[in-house]
Image (cartoon, rainbow, N blue to C red):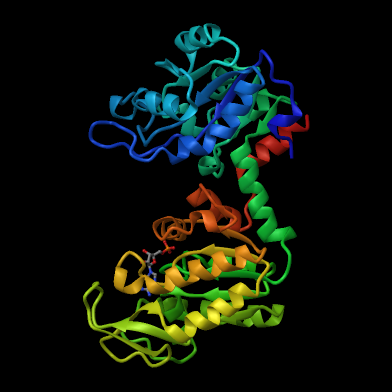
Length: 400
Ligand code: AMP
């Protein structure tokens, strides 16, 4: 895997694809600079190497036309704050304006280009648009894991114009490394904790990871499709009756592969989907009519914690309860505690793909696990076993 450190970037104009698709408030101020902070190590490395930094990103979905609401000019000051250096801005990402801004850039200087998605060629993966972007730089770095699953002009197509002159940024390299550790090189026992609302949205992930894990913990809304398939009473719990065969098929495959599947043995059931509904702890297989399982129960959490703290490699995707409602957040918090404990004992833990990331941040476990992924869709596709086009492109052209 070629990273920035493998190249001499002094005096080179380095085009860096970052993911600065940050949230803005009504006054167009950045409300969460985390994605900018995540790209800082790569940008700092290019500045330190005396390269010229040219940052390209999308913001929102302007659909291929100029839309002032989505101008990257809004985030220029936040980028300068995070980097601690002045940031120049080019009001187009290709053409004479961009070219002139690059020419004015000193060594170690930073230039932010206008929103890539103001041009329709970006999301279409247009080769001539990618070539226009490529003309701005001597070297190309992809550090945008959040868009690595898209074959867009700036994330994938552009790499062909930089044979032997492209590399992964620090963030993208870290994401790839974390996925590798969980999917291929991780120390055993390997445990995947899968939660969330529906089996149907996680089926490809489950099928892919059955070959990699020793333990599969299933929690959250997904539980009840398995429970109903096994003949249990799920009451009003979320369930996909058309996926019962699929659930049984997963369990049969897991057995054949020697994977131990752990389903909740008890759940916190509620008489309505609200924080102040009445609750009772019941057997997962005997949920009374009119009640729905909204969180894992105490016995379950003890069993899950034992499996988790006995693991050396852990993947966590999806909450085990409706963690957005405080009354049903205990299960997800308890899983976070167990993953943190296992990590303290030396396990590698990756939290990735969607709501479990929000949960670890909300409950303060972000710095107690080994790695929290920055890419929702890109992480889910990686866990499904797909080779992401943005990653494949660098792998192909960096060797050239
Ligand atoms: P996903 O996007 O598939 O990972 O699902 C995340 C969502 O699943 C969260 O918003 C949780 O509130 C929801 N969820 C977790 N457990 C349950 C449950 N037992 N019943 C309904 N929704 C749940």
